[in-house]
Amino acid sequence: MKELFIKRKLENKIKKFIKRKEIIAIRGARQVGKTTLLKMIEEGVSDPKVFINLDIPENRKNLEENPLDFVKRFKKPGKKLFLFLDEIQRLKDGGEKLKIIFDEVPDVKMLISGSSSLELKSKILPFLVGRAFLFELYTFGFEEFLSSRDESLLKLFQEKHASLKRFIDGSGDITSPSFSDEFLRYWKDYVIFGGYPEVVKAKETEKIAILKNIFDLYIERDISTFFKIEDTGKFEDLVKILSFRTSDLLSVSSLSSDLKFSIRNVEEFLNILKHTYVIYLLAPFYKNMSTELRKARKVYFLDLGLRNSAISNFSSFDNRTDKGELMENFVLRELLIEFEDWKINYWRTTGKAEVDFILSKEEKIIPIEVKLHGENLGKSFYSFLNTYKPEKGIIVTLDKFGKKKIGKTTVYWVPVFYF
Image 1 (cartoon, rainbow, N blue to C red):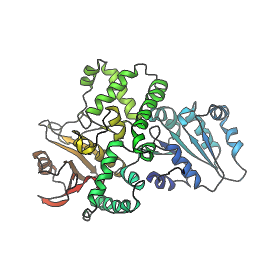
Image 2: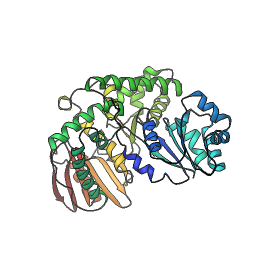
Image 3: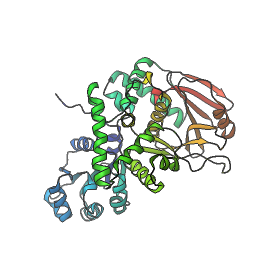
Image 4: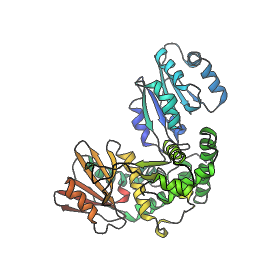
C-alpha cells in the first residue's frame, strides 16, 4: 500500500526562501512531520543535494569532527549543494558547526529541523543571528486534515476560510455556509483525535493506541532522556491537570498545591511543555492598567488529540461535557497558525468581564467570542464593544451564521469550521 503524503501549507512558505543564502530552520514537536516536510522539499530540488539524519551516531560524528570536510565530501566543484540536516539538536555544538559552514562555504544552502525549541534557542540559533529564517511546524490544521479526507469539500472550505481572512485582514463580507453537516462531521472527528500525521492516516481502531504511543515516547525521549526529569509521574500528572483546565486561567500556585510540588518545579515543567509544543500560554490584552488583567495566562493545547489522550477521553463530540473548551481551544490553535501577522490575546477585567480572543494589529482590534450555539451575547462582549469601539467582531458558533451591526461594530456569527 502506497504511503499517504499530505501536502503541508508550510511548504509553500518555505519555498519562497529556497534560493536565498540564509539557513532554513524548521522546528516543532516530535512526529509532526518535520522529516517528511524536509524530504518533500528535497524532492523539488534539482541541484546536488544530500539528506543527513543526525539521529545516526556516525553522521553526527563526521559532522562534529570537521564541518568543512563534511561539506567537501558531498559538494561538487562549481555546483551549489543543498544540505538537509534532520534533528539538528542532536549535534554537539551544532550552532558553531552551522555558522562555520555558512560563513566559509558560500555555495551551500542548509535546511535544518529540530524537535526542541529550548535546545535550538539556547545552542543553535544564537550562532545564526542574521543567517537563518525560522519556521514552526505544527500538527495538521483543519485544512490539512480536510485535504486527507475530501478534496471537493476542501475547495469549499478554502473559499469560506478565504472570505473570513479577507474580512479580518481588510474588507468584504464573509460568505454564507453550505454543506454544514458534512463540515461539522469532519470537524468533530478532528477535535477528538487531533492532527498528528500518523493519527490522521490511521484506521479508526488504531488512533487511540498511536496517540498513547506518541505521548509515551515524548515522556521517554524528551522528558526523561533529554531534559533529565526523573519524576516523570509528576510531569504526567501536570499534563492531565492542564488537560482538564483547558482554556482556564493558569494558577501556578494552585498547580503547585494540587501536585504537592514546588512552584519552581511547576514553572520548569510548564516551560518544557511550552517549548516542546504541547501547550500554548495566552497572555491578556490590556490598555487600562487599573481594571484589566495584565499577567495571568490561559492554557491551551497545540493538539487536541494529545490533550484528549492525557485524560483518556475519546467520547464523540456530541456526548461530551467539554464541548465549549474543545471549540475554544480549536479556534486558538487555528488563529495562531492562520493569522500569524496578528497579535492574539484574551481580555478580562478585574470585574471578570471576559472576551475569549482579541486580535490586534497596529490600531486594529477585533474581538472574537466562542459560543457553542451562538446564543445571545453576554454583557462582557458588549462591554468590550463599548470600551474599545472596534470596527469588526466575530462570534464563533457550531453552525449559526449571521451579520449584525452593534453600534459602530459589524459583528458576524461564523461556523467554527470556517477557521
